[in-house]
Length: 270
Length: 338
Image 1 (spheres, rainbow over the protein chains, first blue to last red):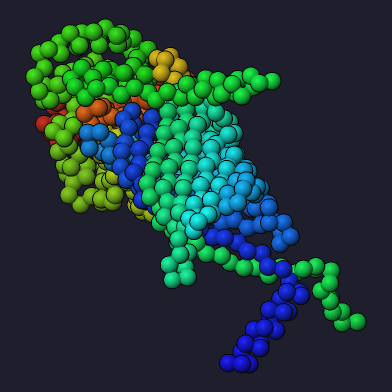
Image 2: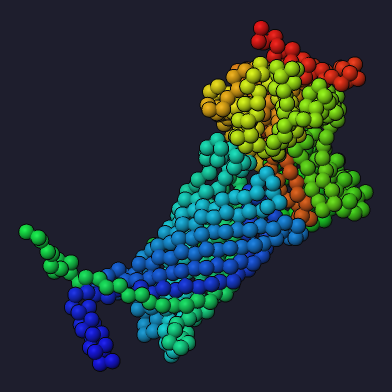
């Protein structure tokens, strides 16, 4: 036992001399939402149902010396199952999301931090109405630059995290008004399918508020999630709204980073 | 300078107002009728080509709505309205019925009797059957005869290779697509590719670019590739009738450009609009023609494609168990090999 402690102490000393530690905070959650979807390419009718999401979000400081600037990255998978108002057809949606960005941390007052920044988000997926034999599916594809604001309130034992982002400019896929996927895919006619997006044709907001808590030395959180996006191009209207509860866990990973690469001795055979 | 935040806020609100959700009609008889009318008005591709006054149709059918008492009557009423389009690709589907317009073939003689092709003179009862194909060598093994009854029933390349190998000593092939109501366009393209010597321009397709009835894209050329390793470079006669529809219409359009092909029989039934679907507030499905397909001269194929030679089924031949169209095809193959 004594020798183990000694070894660990020496490792710690060595690490502090040779390396710096970069901490990454990971947040992993499972969400249950209600879903409201509209896809004019597939149907004139709105669809309502339930959804599920799995998400991973991570943030780490740009460098060990600079903890005010944070890199953000993450991925999510959103699944939805919905019905038309008459209940005669179902729509399924599956959308994957990848994002990366940067925020700067400002301390407003004791226990309150605000982190504004920018994020690049890519969404890819599909919506499907199996009953539509001739046009059963439509692709979801977009890339947005999003202003993002995160807030952290940590006071009197209460730890709340809020995050809001909204698409500002980007690129999105919307099929031409009456085109079939046969013409797009088989005949490579992608004219009028990709659109520059901004507030005039794509509006949305994604927000979440989480409350962190600890059970048996492990960090968890529960939160409320809301996402709404609507966009229009080629006389087609699309919307996707989800809101619900998320349950997640928080953990940190450590990475040893050499303090100064030039100080690492190099070995030359001759 | 202080007005800047207000200006930005107003700009955002102004831009936001561009994204209003499309209205959804009410789920009652009038709302559903209007939804069906609107979908056709905005998305159907042949209103101008067929010179249909769709507004008048709406007025006429709305005026009769008070005679509609239940869903069954509403369905029939809307089916009658949609039949004004004279389009076999327009269907209304509910849990209890599927409306259809069949006059594209019921108004004409079919020049086809199934019992004739399964008679001893042709397929007999020892024919080969793979995928959707039925084939046999006829006329003393001189001609290969294939009946393909649906482009919904597929085939594989190996199956086609076996068939062409079976016909290797034949001087020509008859490809009978009478009474073939269509199916998958990809089978149409693939089957035609075995008869092309090079990748061939075989037509065009358009699509609507907006709700206005004349908003169409520029025609996109369609090509039929060639299967260089598996290729029929002998005469092939395609037999057609008024029931050769939709994907079969597309197949005939492609075969018109094949170098050794000859189309014989009656005009095809048409169905040149690639269909899409939408929904009504009561959950019924509405299928309609969305993308018109054109021939190489940019003519619509909605009303069908004329054969290279019209041949009718002779009633005296029928009594003798002979199919006049197949016999004419055999004569053509014999003549083209002289």
